[in-house]
Length: 86
Image 1 (cartoon, rainbow, N blue to C red):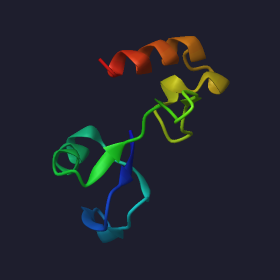
Image 2 (cartoon, rainbow, N blue to C red):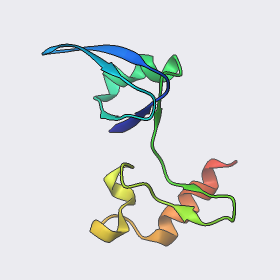
Image 3 (cartoon, one colour):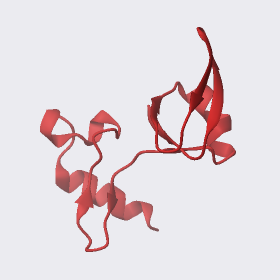
């Protein structure tokens, strides 16, 4: 899954330590991302509604939301995202 970095962090990789800057998008396995999510150092990239209530589906979100590439329908995604508000 892809995540967006909040602030600057250093992560240990197979090739050494890598510095990630605020706004960077990174693909991490869920077990590695768990602690960073809990610490508020990264966030998941998910569909959401903008200020005028238009559905926004980021390219970096989970591919199941990508209707343009065989993912679920816009209507299904919209219903799911609305359910998250409750």
